[in-house]
Image (tube, rainbow, N blue to C red; front, side, top):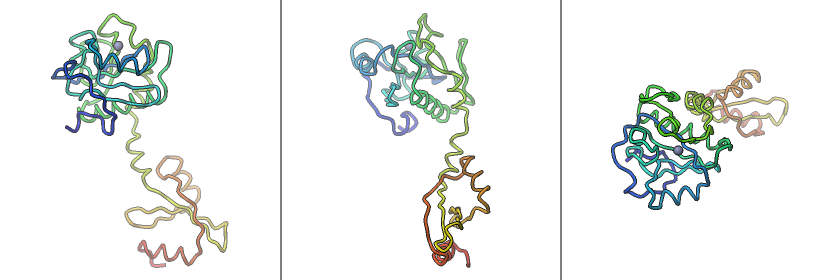
Length: 238
Ligand SMILES: [Zn+2]
């Protein structure tokens, strides 16, 4: 059932009687656990009618309990339950989310946006929700939750960033070659579409690195003859 579970996520199944289809998936609702991960998990796995989709721990541990196609008892509101996938954040009022929690929230939101084809995401401040709604629990119930702990500006900026494309570019590894005869003769190369490409100048290489298009690779000391061999291997004639 791909598309229902966040790729590679740790899974602790919640009780089957605390979920029901369908889940309209108009958005995601963020909550504050107001306690530790351990105490929240014991509530989830216990008899109380409380359940949610994701647990997001301070350590960066991310656990999914139900597929995103089912509704949980998280909002204290029928509309909230059936329209929002839910994420509980470990910690209490006054504790900002950790960087890892923020990143988990961004990553999961981006993933849901992609699989559900939400045209955009927005911080929901009125009801009803349209698709892509990122909500706080207090919009659906008289509660302090999530106690002002969710840094929406950072999360929206992260969700809307184009990190994914940059990461693709950064998969190109490069390497530095020093000529044994002349250690100051240092060149940077990378392999692109099976061709050996040499940075035309140190400045160009530095700008490619600064924009995240090339990741620094290992430095290797070889002779000019070895360099010629490598160039030949990648289709260069000299
Ligand atoms: Zn809540």
